[in-house]
Length: 432
Image (tube, rainbow, N blue to C red):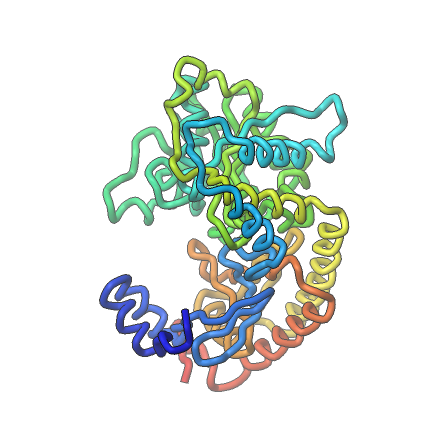
């Protein structure tokens, strides 16, 4: 927007309240986090008042590669010379190329005799991707039962919403039958929940909205084995954990298992063009044999978006890139261990790679720290289904110097918690 057309913060907030979302705006005003983004580049963004933030929320991974990543922008700009959204009815070269790259990324670390072909159908949102994953599981198994975990989150659309926490569906009276939820990390709970009508078990490889509990390799292998024994499909949600966030391109690779179906999105966009993917073992494609048009998505896999996503896959598959993620993760882990030993209100950091959950003693303390962190120039948000945990997702492209800057800002925020300005009184955040 040209400078002469720019609105000030007050004008934007007034219009936003009137025409977009009054109650959301009032929520942020209440906690003095009514940020209006302005300039953004790389790991930073600035608000309209000129305050600069290091983005450690990354919109759930949308900005894994930073804001306005030049490589992604270049790929999209070049694609725009010859392509547009495309026609979802036709055979598509960009979709074929992107799907092939995703398949290669799954098999890259596997021995030849363990490699499989995964098919991919593209969408626009994570909810759409999960809706399709459930449709495939139900269509293939001819069963309708869906098991997920209490406190999980998979999107705000029909089937996906029913697989998540009930608070998202209850206000709209849209909870669907044949969905049940179990305690996370409990293999016996899964065994007891499976019956003759169960089609699939859905799990975020690390449940972000639940506060990033880290599952053991033993548990994940037991889940894979149980699904095989009971002939139900394992659906993994890699919307936030995929694309290099954990030091491997897919988080399930840490557990040395393969899902029957997995979904990815957010970061697949490169922060530039929305695109998601539902990836599934080749044998499940049989459900489309009689009618290949039983599922379509007009904007799913836009041919412009495919070029953004191909650049993301290229970057996130690079060994040097992934080793950098792991190296920075190891350094941050050691720093968080020192902070946990020094401050009794900070419990631990749950972590695989740069997918981290900072656990505080209670919700008010976490929210107060969020404000202290923002005041120190670092933006992050709490986990909605476990608000004593701060979701901490630094950009994957940080340099060593930027990681040091982040650590210094963290230390400043922890020290601020001693100030009377950031008192936590009787469960109420007091930001004076």
